[in-house]
Image (cartoon, rainbow, N blue to C red; front, side, top):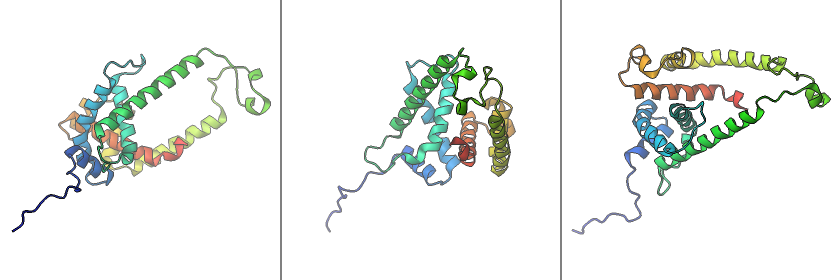
Length: 212
């Protein structure tokens, strides 16, 4: 009997991390697989940010939250089956891009502070709704805010009970993840963080038209 040889062209099995990523991309038991990825991603983000400077009003936890939400949104773009695929490398790349974006916004905000603009600074078409005191909200802004409020209420109603509740506790009541454990019926903070990110991802999808 001839001995069976392995096919040299056969791809090696996926690592546990890539299997979790593939399941998330395929929407298979997403919360379970996302929970398994969460602690690893948090570690990789911290590694990517080691030695990096953050704007004074931004903490590492804030940045990590922004990065994880971005990963939630873009995870479908990661090519699991590509040779040499490194999810940790991709997460670190997202973290560095997010840090650059934060610094760009911080510098832009700094440049814009203290600059009073008057009607003479605008042409007739662009200046009709502007005032020297820019704290005065324009009618178009108020209409947009009202539209967003209505859309937010409608979107929240479309979420599952747990996703709606975790957003209410975190976003609207400002509770820490550790404070939310008992109310949500969990014992690990990482599970609550994962639940919140999944809920925010769904909310962003429902409110996608406000990103344009």
